[in-house]
Image 1 (cartoon, one colour):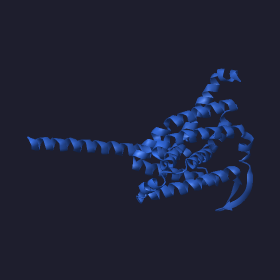
Image 2 (image 1 turned 180 degrees about the vertical axis):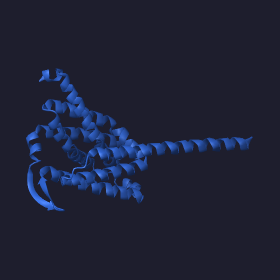
Image 3 (image 1 turned 90 degrees about the vertical axis):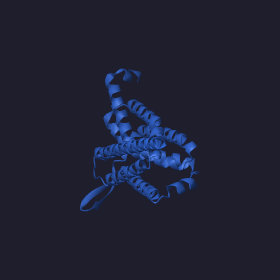
Length: 257
């Protein structure tokens, strides 16, 4: 077993798979930022770390049940949709449930935010169940990671390498969970974009359940481009405010003279 980690190609596989897990975990970090926002501020960080640790255990369990995971792709039933035959599998049912949950969750959160009910709900739900938040993170991570775990099975033959890659990826996610969550919470417009991204991911999971393939690269590119526009807008707003402050300060000094 130890000889496996002395091979350069093994480490290349670990790094590649870990990078894939990190990229595919972006949506999970966004979801975590939203769901932990209902907890008291002093408990949010611990909820993120505990939730991701539980999620790590869940992913490893998924890897250790490879026969079950691969069995989820076996057809259970068939039915027709818009003139095309669709196979129902265990994987598609999980994706459908996760997709519909994300659509519901992001839609209600966007409604609360746009109708200015977010602060009221935050005060009322400040004592939200810590255990329920952890369970949400763990369950949604399983749904988010289902595709990546199946991809890992196709990329790497050794379970030990898969586990190492997933541990590395989850450690990176734990390290960045707080900064991402704090950034999302501190900027309302970013939170709206994050919720819209979750809504898009929910739709993506739903259509995937119907075996309609939409490349995830398009979704991640759209999110990255949207975030870039938001960062440019934030910089512009900050510069305008700084300039106005400087002008206002100059006017006051001029008036005093």
